[in-house]
Amino acid sequence: MNTLSFPKSSSRTKHPAGVLFICAFLTVVMSGCAATTRTLNPETEQHYDASYDFSDKKQIVRTLTESLLSSSAVQTEAGKPVIIVYGVDNETSEHINTGGITDDIRLSLIKSGEYRFLNRQQRGNVQAETEFQQAGFVPPAQRVAQGRQLGADYILSGTLRSIEKKQSRQWRLNKKELIYYSMNLELTDLQSGEISWADNVEIAREASRPILGW
Image (cartoon, rainbow, N blue to C red; front, side, top):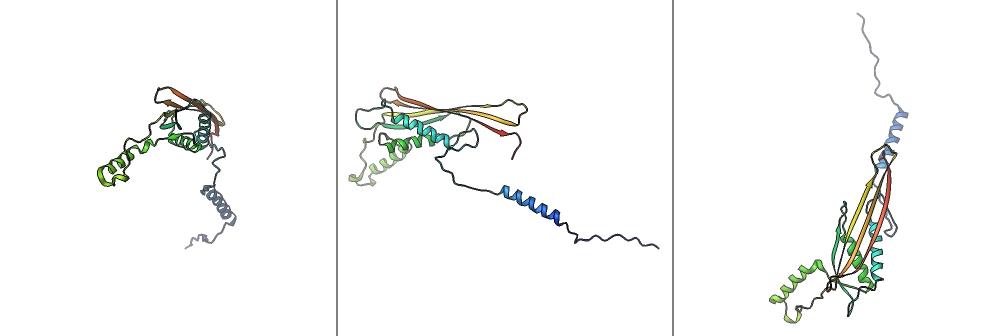
């Protein structure tokens, strides 16, 4: 009887070149996927795409603050004008916190020493604390006097709008996008209802990116 024999497979067969190539490839891939961070200078203009970013906010705040401070149309008979902020309406398609714009404008105007601001967000807390003191929990000499709050001279409000355009569908190596932003801000005189000051900032940006990429 003939016995069939099969070649024995060696589990110790080595392919050093292939193993080294795979290891090198995995090293490159993993290093590319590793998270990295770096500190940026907020004063330096930075844009990664065409959409709204912190550099746009700084430009809007700087331009509108300088415009208001240089205007002679905002005046009161005595003292510094008192302003209450009613915010900026976001009419763009993006989720933009416009409160950050008005907060920075208010801070710049307060630092200038030319304007005073009422804290609209704290009115409920001010009323609650005043009622607490007047209810007898605080000695009379330490209670806040009622009817002493400032009245606003002006309302600060505005609107942020945008127009977005994308290239039509056709074969291209790069896809382009154009976004236009318009930020309008105004001061309304509470006594007369007149718009005493208004200005706007316009920002237009085009961004392109390859159709294929990471």
